[in-house]
Image (cartoon, rainbow, N blue to C red; front, side, top):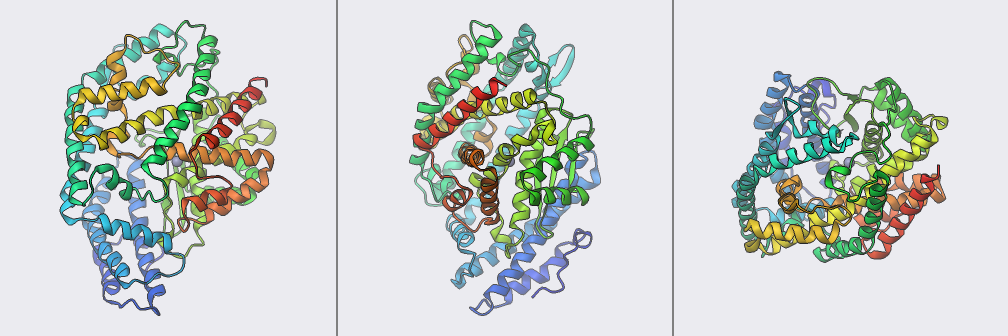
Length: 567
Ligand SMILES: [Zn+2]
């Protein structure tokens, strides 16, 4: 056993490959027998935890202060000098375990995943996989370089977003058109980039022995429990059930705004012209109230959050030189999560903290699992942990429960959340359906004009309720504006599945909150040791995307919205 392997982050954060290699070599040399397999996997697991935690900590440091050159250098040095050799060593160790044919209890699912990873692994694909990453980076660079001149200043597209919440419609339209025109200026470049990506992906699939990229990607994404046909069934269910519901939401918005036609620049502004919610004055208040809320959801979850607070595992306030966005990182050796966000005092800061809190609780609940390889959970369920937490916490957002809002403001926040969830499904279906077409019709998909036509066709099927007339060029190029299509093929439907799962957890909670939370926690505690079907079932949900499951959920959401409108 690796009794001398450091478990102290203060110590191992300074390790280099020289400090780690002896452990990897030891594992490479040590025979795996039925008697030794458990201790071998335990040691391998600890080594993985250690490298993973160094990775996480050094990366986190770069996001806390993007101006910290030293942090950047440390992270890059780590990638080149420690992480890359550790990946190579790890691949050999993985093969060694698979070759032993031995399977310690609790590793069935992780080994299933490793076997598929080994099956699709082709050394001659490594340069192509790198090429794919570079092309994805090119997409990022193109997009992040997009700026426009707004009110005499050069601003990024993200900086335009607040304008869409303003009540001045002329101003909103002006900003929207400016943004779109800027994006259309890159149309040819993005077409060219897409063609290159398609070709690289086609070659990766062919070299790995697959007839098309979709079947390759299915394995790469470890999709064992649903087929492409299941996704198409999900699209159909969405068309049948979510599209009409989305249309009702758009119609309500149109009429409240008093408009003849709802246009793409009318989708963010508050339909009743209210000021944005301002739930808290400072980070202290955000953390204090979040703690009360989590404690009400479940005292154990509240304890977890308080541990994070005491151990300084939260960095929530927006400040200069902090990376944008939010995340929950895992420190796998000490089995603690770390939450990062950029709170400025808005409702999204509360919901983001609650969402990331769900991810964080997953880490705590998994801490009892002996092996590192039992920790990763498919996104189809990982996002249930976070999304369901947003819903489980909803009753305690009220000030008289210790939360942030009057009854009316809490209702408003929840209505917005529920409407967004319904509107997401049709859009998700367009993004997914487009990709099913593209990767099973590669030749046609390498022609940008056919891509535009396909996107437009799907858009018209699913996105009913918003008037895009006279905006053809903007509408047909929507696929170019979806980062996932370029950077992470097919990865998107997971969010739609998880949302459906989370709402089923919520349906249970409305009947019996305590029982629903208990089931939720039991499912989280399974980590990555169970199938998706079992994870969902344990949480009290069906892993299904048929008309019945979706209509039950949509019906519940619409009833809830109606009740909340009366508050
Ligand atoms: Zn999440």
